[in-house]
Length: 213
Image 1 (spheres, rainbow, N blue to C red):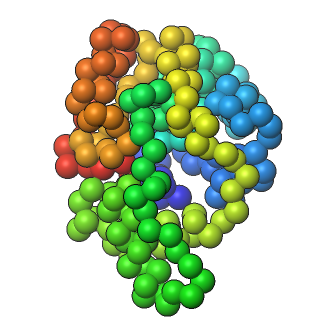
Image 2 (image 1 turned 30 degrees about the vertical axis):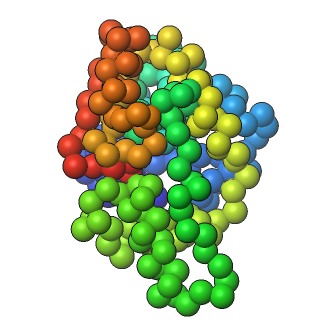
């Protein structure tokens, strides 16, 4: 659902599969162990089932899904024609947990209170430009929050697993960050510079005026 507004645009030129991560959204429970390489093996099976043969595919992953996508590309080899990671996690000390800054919801709140809190939480953690936080964004986030998670994402996000994948696929990977992505430490520009130095073959881009989502 985080890809809702991208699907129809991308579908003009591509056949698009927008999949929930295992254990999130509408997908079944995440298989153990909850590591990016292990979950990538799960995705490799799906990619090969959906698109058999050797024709290259384009992969994209957002946030928690970014490091899993990068590991999927590494396992797919030449089958992965290009990879895009957006708002990437799994970058060690460059990624910081911001969940402590969010307001928790409770069953005693009215619908208006819930929507106001979700809007404010989105402004803190996801969408920097508050004018972009419309009813659709709030509805998407509320539904995601209401769905039961079986994937423990924080150990992946706080690890250095992205580096392990980029050691293999940096040359065909583009890393995108919104200018105001709150999860990057100390800031997006510094992190992108560090990544470019570590992986000269990596393509990096910063999206002006954007946050994490």
